[in-house]
Length: 95
Image (cartoon, rainbow, N blue to C red):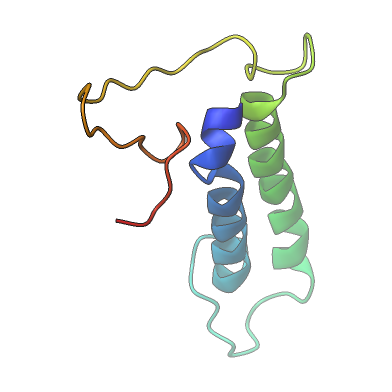
């Protein structure tokens, strides 16, 4: 769970949700021409938003029986001397 959080899974999920909102919830860019049924896209969007948020929670949750955050481990192999820790393993984005 911690690894995925450090890699930015929650930020990526929010980007996906914002993309849905921008496209009007149906995967098509909103035309803005008034042809769309008012409220329909917003209603279609909510289940998709919920699915994304639940999927992220399942991946990162550390609660017993709730998610995979305690089931899986990640390993990084770096050079013994001068090896910098990668992002997600205690390293930062800076060069």
